[in-house]
Amino acid sequence: MTVERVNVPDPISKYNKSNKVQKTKKNAQKDSISVSEDAKTKGVIYKATESVKMAPDIRMSRIEEIKKKLQDPTYLTQKVIEDLAEKLMEHFKI
Image (tube, rainbow, N blue to C red; front, side):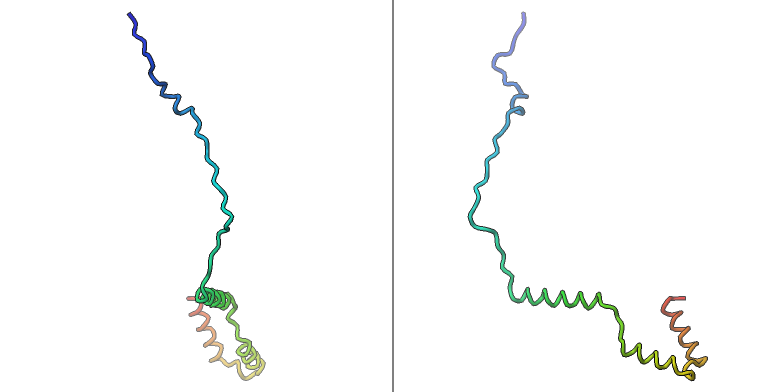
């Protein structure tokens, strides 16, 4: 004698069903944001700070002063050369 199943749901059939995707309704209103004056000011300050950080640290007045000193033949003494060598060694950690 054989027993057959009657009215047993197929377990695979629920995975084969496709659910319809509902479309979203479009709103006529667009997204927007508002920025406070304080936030705008902080943004300007931040941008200026970053610009200063990226700028090279060169003082042209100091460069001109050093150029004039180097043109003077009495400036390059042994003491100046030794001081310069020491500062370079400290800078490059030698």
